[in-house]
Image (tube, rainbow, N blue to C red; front, top):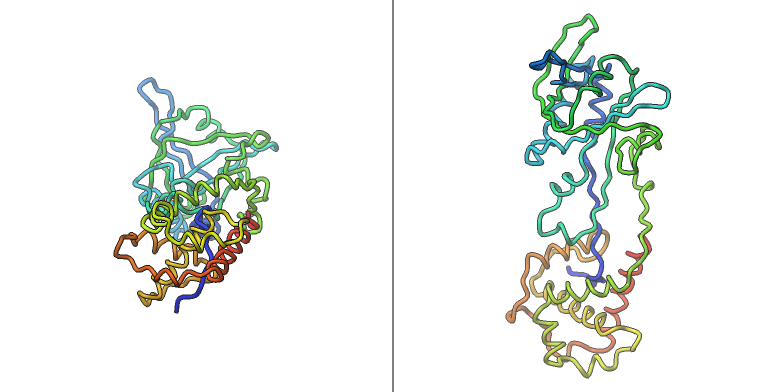
Length: 334
């Protein structure tokens, strides 16, 4: 049964996207010992880095870990940027290797094209790192690596432990790494959160939007989206003077645009009822449900519309209140 709802097209519905966190579990259970650096001499005899890898004790989880990272790359169209890797020189002389999914590629992968510009995604990401003593191999890698050079990234098991040593398939190739210093980390650094939060992943409570409310931008977006989703209805109101007499008696503190939005939402409610739709139109996520419906359903002259006498002042005022409550609640969570 379709329930009455409020929604304001001037703001983008929020969509929570939770990144893959299995890699962190596999990394811990695999018991990473440290990093491996493989070099080969070039034509001049100078050693150049060709491979790096994570050296684990437990093969089962090492395998799952590297497969997860490779999957991120494959799911992003084989874009090696899908795996971010950053090397950080720590103040105490050690160094940290930090790694995570790339936020932008993850967002694009998770959002269908029709939603990409119409939702406000809240991303929950997980980062992982390994801190080690700085040795000759890392120093050599840092000195000799040149951005753009293709480096194999893989997982090893048992190298240097005396146990059975293995090189695990699969692997991926990266041609860009970030090198930073603990005392000079940029806010965009994946290590920034790791150092500041002491290796704790971000949680919902740690994310709070603090952007100021731009009412003019909300009004502009509302106008644009109403014209896109309800072209016939908006044309009837603006050009044909439809419902002019009813609109005149609505309290003046509501803008004409808000009144038009209320009328559109009333029509949408009745259309869903006519279709005997099972769409959930109230509670958490109802705005996403309505957005998906509107993107998949084109308003035409044949679309259902209630008769003129259906639109009364009390009905429109009730819808105006629901829409206002939705916007107020949305903005309170900025």
